[in-house]
Length: 400
Image 1 (cartoon, rainbow, N blue to C red):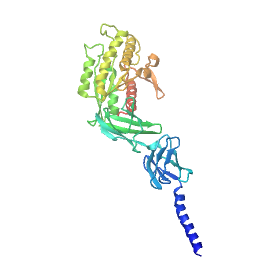
Image 2 (image 1 turned 90 degrees about the vertical axis):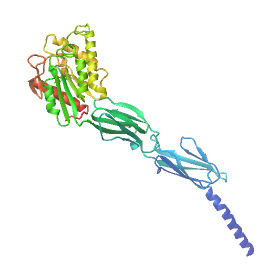
Image 3 (image 1 turned 30 degrees about the vertical axis):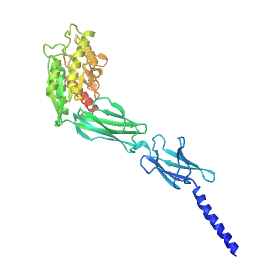
Image 4 (image 1 turned 45 degrees about the vertical axis):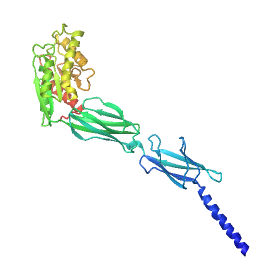
């Protein structure tokens, strides 16, 4: 009996020694994506022996755990290009047996990772703070951020999370966007005129008359002030009557127009800088003078210019002059699309350069030119005003 008890005690002691060793030789791995931006691993391994832990396809990280259970809190960051993540742990135990454990986790999509913050309404003419924020708080993702002022082309650049300044110079709706391969975000920033009213200047020679009245009638309001300044019988090529370059500069300084609608050129054709109308040298000089006017009205990006091209006249010397004026204006506006939009009335009223006194509007044949074969009549002026208003709205300027 005594020897039997001793044998049982020895067996119990052996079991007590071997059971913990067997438990510690076990290897397991689990993964979670509960911590924003990171994959967390939970490792159970035999303490005191090296363990290699790696993501499939990546280099291994080696560690020697001091306890059976180890938490690797920020083992890997979330990625936009790979959401299904698999991790492998391997260890050779004290018993000489190589063991391996795997864990898989799915990380969030990048479809809502970045945020673009900007005020909804601001005063035009100032700088606005825009913030690009990474909701994962990693800051390692660049986005293409575009800003687009009313009437302008988009201006885009790659940016990383952080704040930047944007100059909202022009009243109207400014478009903001960010783009990555996984996400697109759009915002609209509305810039109100500092004085509370948009100022529209309608100017030119007799061609602008009647059109200016329709513009005032249709968009003039408590929010939009329309100022008319028609100078009959004047022209860019005849500064003895009115120097339009100086006049444009004075208008811009005095009125400070947010929008300038100009229709000018029916009285032109006079020699300039030693060049007769209407050859290349004359067109180049006319373009140079018109460009200076455009620059004055643009007011360093605060103003937008809508310059109406001349529809073909019925005949006479006007035909050659009108073609030269339009060619010069196209040259003057080249490279200034952010500030100047040419409104091609010739394409509407005289397509192909063919004069017509009447045209169909809403299915009805109506007269659109005056008896002189040059000016628009009230019906034609009404249509031209509608074309201008559509252009203003298309450029997201705040008109009714």
